[in-house]
Image 1 (cartoon, rainbow, N blue to C red):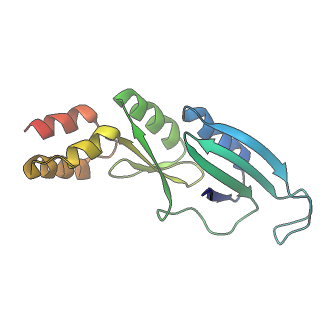
Image 2 (image 1 turned 90 degrees about the horizontal axis):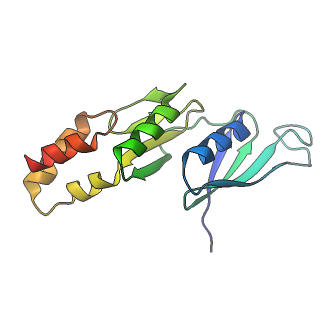
Length: 156
């Protein structure tokens, strides 16, 4: 059995998946094609479909006009090892999009992302409940995550 996330784009699917795969190491577009039959979204060739990977996750995408916009019910979480990775992804994805609290942002296509340090999960699961609470409280006040600040808060 295989599980694949599926994304519905109103337009610009190829630009979006090309952008995403350029940002995440180990990503690629497997194929892009047009639906050769008429569909509720239009005549033959008007609907595009694609398969791609982001890191170790599989995705399918469709460009078939308006349906439901992306929302927070689905997001892509990227756990980063370094602040440099966080900064690079944050800066690229926020261009034309919208930044939010707690490492969340929406890209220019409206897809929600969470750009988080791997270290955050480790700190929030620390056996010292006071340390975990300090980190959680700091995290809730951040927009883009700052690993050094989280580490400093964890130390007290």
